[in-house]
Amino acid sequence: MKKIVIVLALIALSLGSFSCGGGGAGGPNVPPGENPGIPSVVQLLPSTFIAQTNSFITLNTKVLDGNGIPVANIPVIYTNLSSIGTLSATSANTNSLG
Image (tube, rainbow, N blue to C red):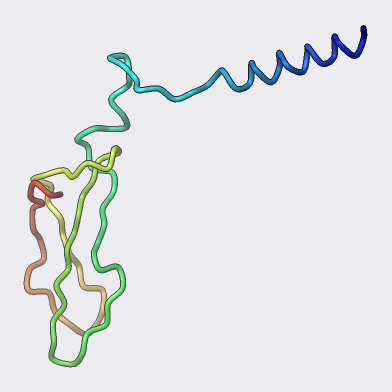
């Protein structure tokens, strides 16, 4: 009798652990995310680059909000910390792609 109770208890516990905490499609009560529309991530692409002498590199910047959505019309300022090389533009605004 004791073994049957233990087996039933283990079955009940295992079924309970599999039935709770599942995902789901969500609904109207799903929170909007983290800081929608507010810049929180700035990516400079390429992150690593090597230029040959007398050549140029094109830098692309992407600004994303907390949900990973691009944010438009954000001013970005570029600064050259190296003693070599120059920047053709030191600032730009993001477009609809961030």
